[in-house]
Length: 151
Image (tube, rainbow, N blue to C red; front, side):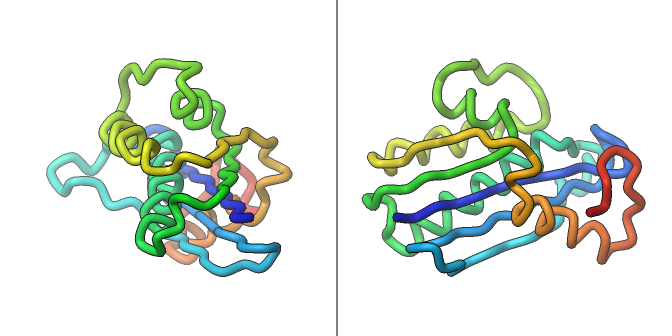
């Protein structure tokens, strides 16, 4: 079984702060991959960041990693604490508007390549590994936290 977790944050303001995501993949209870990265918007539109964009960036990073490994046919569970991502990607909510929309559409186009994927929401406190990864890059860049705790 492959279990994946993603998270994102945008600090010190949302929207318009510095956005970063964290993503981690476990295979048979062993951590096999992780990624933490600051989202770099188009240089012409530096204020186009939000926590939703960061969450979707983490989700997309997982999908791309799994596809690159050829694991898209395997049973996969992807967990995130973003109801927006989980509910939009499971078709419970429509994708409406916001800076995250292009990444959400890219994710939706990739999902049919994963016939055995299950998307699951979990509370933030249970998503601590991906949460720590998303905040690590911001802390390293000297971003001050005003919305969430630094950990």
